[in-house]
Length: 276
Image (tube, rainbow, N blue to C red):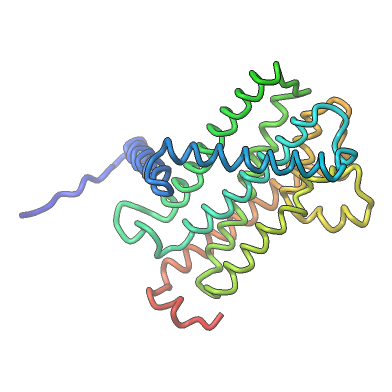
């Protein structure tokens, strides 16, 4: 029996087909990690609350509140933790989806671009939903949260996610060349973000030498700019949003070129031959 394949002859038809595939792929990706979307959302909320509680106790018990920006201490913690989690999870999800021979990419009409977009967008969706619920609960319990410029936080948050996607793509496409070494470097990078992201000490409170240690990290810029929008009395002097934007665009373009080359030249036994 002859099987006919539907071919979209118009740009609109192809776009609609891609969006339909993307929607189903996002749903599948959201359910894949925990087997249930509701359970996955609960896990995201629990992880955020645990980290929020840990840092609240850490700052309180060790007397580190002097490092915080004058104002609402909870907002200070939230702006650091939310962007940190979003960035690190984007790195991990993009890295796992970037392999040209991974997942469903061997089956048409699934493409590498579709696989990457579904993975990172499902992660962003879960993060946004979890953070919205946490903000709503905190707002109700505390009688309100005052952000100086709520709209101004959106772009730094988005760039924390986008830069995580870009860095994760670079780790992902480089993994076939060194399948043992690159994942180790990626794990070290995510662990280093606990300190180098600047979520503990604001950039304005650091010495020039300390800033030079941290300003290579796009997450450091995103968190500092988000706090500049959250607090009326904080003006970021050592960070900007141009650096995360340019770094993200560069990494994405380079990663997609490497991924295209790998998809044409890589074999299933590639990773087994590598010694790194």
